[in-house]
Image (cartoon, rainbow, N blue to C red):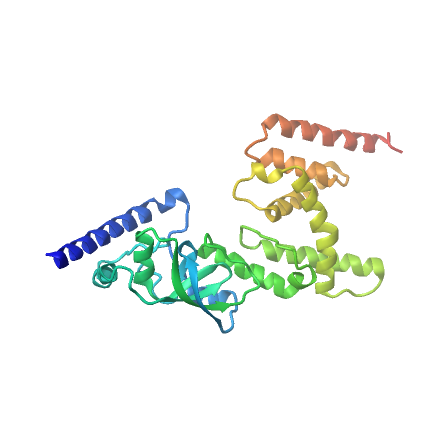
Length: 307
């Protein structure tokens, strides 16, 4: 009777886990939260990972285990079982009541992928555990990963890695972290650096390497604009965006405004325009006031009042 009760409890736990998996998968588009596990092979290829280094036995936070080597379709991001075929093994883990061997994980940045022990991770999460004992092999990467990383963001991380490989900014400016949230942004930054390379060579009448130019660009263009963005607390009006996203917008708007008004618009004016046009917090009248302010110097310049 006791054995039957244990089997019934294990079956009910699996049933609840399956129902939760179905509900989470259905609601994922509404919550805009990652619902699928990250395939380790995708991570390995996109981030050019070499061999892992054994880190020994350690307790790993369960909410940082968001990937799998082979079974990324069997469980969702919360390690809830998606398939009925997982029942027997899953219920068997439940009946063992925690007397299970350590799982095996690959670590990349702040995330972990399961090599062996998917059912153990799934049951532990269902039981409300915070951590699990694991043997860990760590793979070094130049690009940070966190538990919220999605497959789409992994493509952006791949671009970021290529950007670092070309600019070596993580070596020349170790504290930098240029985080963009859309594809193609890092290639656009590389085009900016290439243009700046031409300007520096003309000014100093000598050649500059791309890596050397990138360091100057970071110090003389990126960092000053970033300081303005931070001083104006612009991120508060742009949920889900980063300082680097705003940098791209500000530079684009500065060029657009300069062409429209016939003079080099100050960076502070460009940041105000970005905030007024796109922020969720600034009213429409703020944009009109900025446009009027920009037209003033333009008219004076054309009339010769500043000569």
